[in-house]
Amino acid sequence: MNNYPSSNLDLALMIGNSRLHWALFIDKTLYSTGDTFHLSASMIEQLAENPTLENWLRAIPLASNLPLIPDYPIPLILASVVPSQTALWQIYPHLRLISLEDVPLQGMYPTLGIDRALAVWGAGITWGFPTLVIDAGTALTFTGADNNQCLVGGAILPGLGLQFASLGQKTGQLPLLETGLMTSLPPRFAMNTSDAIQSGVIYTLLIGIKDFVEAWWQLFPNSQVVMTGGDSNSLKNYLYQQFPDIESRLIVDHNLIFQGMQN
Image (tube, one colour):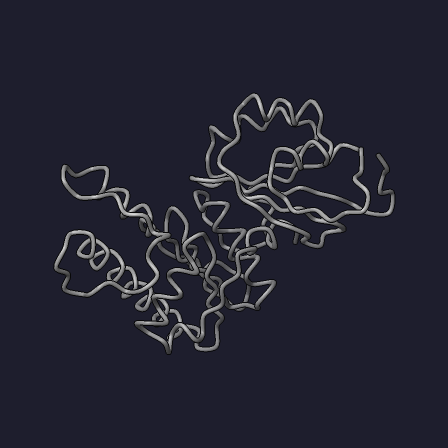
């Protein structure tokens, strides 16, 4: 193995409710990203005992075309919304845990999710303030910041997949639907149960997104609106079919949180 004395390598980890989101930075430039399910305690112990990039690349799917792999311990920058997962990573010897105090955004309240804070900060420094972030993950969140880099506020509701899962798991006869198989809008007045679930969930989400975006643009007419999260591409596609004038002004950026972590 060879060292990289002239380069600084960092791994960033955002622990979400459903998945782990990874990024590799070289000299603070985003190099590659990937997602995994939550790792086992034994895998985390192995990484803590041998925290080299080579070992990391065996454990997580980060594309790396580096001509040389450094053999020194790799620092890990971590943000998390799952306390039980955070606790497992405390054994990592080169850990930097990011909290709200590390985010330069003004006017944050104490219980604001670190993922929301990092995403809106990352959107602002990448696309400009004011900005509204729509994070389409397990939860669907709206988070806005004004021209002065101050939190305006936002909203939280169950995300697309969570709404389908709740109907499939908490009812006796409704099916559990997979969001990845849905590419076009369902009929609004459906004639079968699966389409009826899709209609109720998707059209209600779309009109909610439209309402929040339009209300934001009344406050900040020239503001960017940026979508991120696992369902952002699907929702933007639905918006294109239902509200193309709104969709055409939306940006999709899956790296907002990582951009916020490195700035």
